[in-house]
Amino acid sequence: MRSPSKILAIAVFTVTCSITALGGCGGASDSAPGPLGKRFDDMYIAAVPLDQKQSVVQSQNDWSLAKMQNAKAEADLNESTTQISIVRNEQKASKLAVESAIANKKAAEASADTNRMNQAAKDLHNAEALSKAAEARVKYYDAYRGYLTRVLRHTQENMYWREAQYESAKAQLGQKNGIAPKGVAYDSFPKQEQERAKREASARSRVESERSRAMTARDSWRRAQDSADRDSGRPSSLPDPMATSGATSSSS
Image (tube, rainbow, N blue to C red):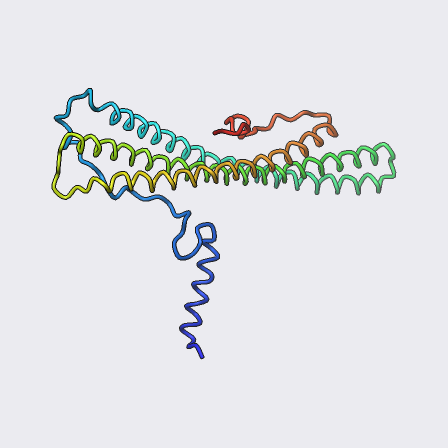
């Protein structure tokens, strides 16, 4: 029979596995990327002529661009936090509007005024339609944030992959010129680059699946919003983050 301490340990492990289901237990494949383990010091190739450094310069430029893309993705995700807060507050307001419309309808029915009753019924219908659209909009923004989270992870992986390419390019140049720094294992650099390339490719594939999920939520919101706008006769001009960011078009 297992001791209570062992049973507790198993229970804790099970809960932990459930929380980290995206990565899986026993070696999370979706763990956040960490710094490179291997770097080739610039000073080793400082004396190499510039005309031999084209691949080094190009890979350095690619790395710089990747860092800017990562910063943009981080800013977009942070901005979405504020956007979601606003959208949720608007959903709460729409629920209050429904409650108010229900109260007005009851008052109209008590008055026995047909015109007032008809208007109150129409107002309630419109309020319910707008509330339904507001709820769909919250789901859309939640899915959009999930998409941005995946975009950020991909830009992180891409940033480290580009850095690994840069380090590999420097190492290749050093090896080509017969430079042999103490403690440097040249074969470790292409291995590092290949490992980071695999992580980048995996992260990129997950971006598209999240984009599709967000687009499905967006379509549901648009249908609900368009229907509510038609019923109320007042077209809305609510922000659509995936339209303004260009995310409605699949990227390669």
